[in-house]
Length: 358
Image (cartoon, rainbow, N blue to C red; front, side, top):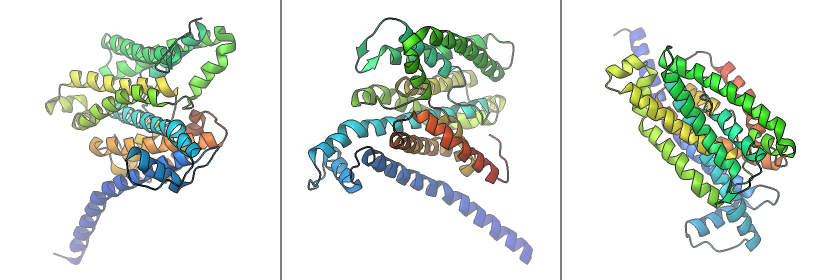
């Protein structure tokens, strides 16, 4: 073997080892980042709690560790009753939106697809606006009519898009996207009319459209988290199927995948996670669009890696975004994700020298 050939072989082995280590390092960094986000999200706010006290409270009350109490009872109340459910809700919502975005991008083979591509956002927004307009007020398990109609509107919009797309003469995915755009536009017109009729409720509708976690509680978390986590977990278990779709539906069918059935299941799971997330947090953009995209730039298109890494990154990102929103005076977290996330996304894209395909 010549010296040149030997050098090429050594280079290939080095590259292979580098890429095999990268996912492990990213998983470790993601787990550490999530823990840091949890501690900082709970510790910081209008009334700051020392990080060590925060760790002590969490370890003593949640894990039962024999930690000597050095904090005051009000600090414990702030941590356990006010901030911890909000931080955990941000984690769950960020995780759900990121996993749903990964599923939609892989299923549609389009890096610009997001969790709202099938009209989920428009349906949820119209449902929330109708709840504000109609003179009915109710509260069940700390969920009002707004949350219930937003959830129902999101799922109904997705079901309508899916049913109409099946009757389209276009290719399945093309018909799905175009139908989603058409139904979303129709729902947006209904939203505009509802906002026009809302009067004093207009501010509440805008608050929902901009997203926020200020109403988080243990009860809301207990209702929404199972839906998001079960749907996201089921998508994770279908990573092999999603990899098949990345190769095209014809290739996926040759691999033994029931394309029609699995497409419907993935669409349903991703839509369920999105609907449950927007029902409790409102419409939060950027997370489900950009997080999977950036993860894919780091580790490639393999869904077995992209899905769990996107879940970690999305959970951490939304916690930090919500923390920044609180520190800036309780501004809508959707504004933070857009203002901070979009420029970061553009910078990352400019730094990438070689493109990639889904």
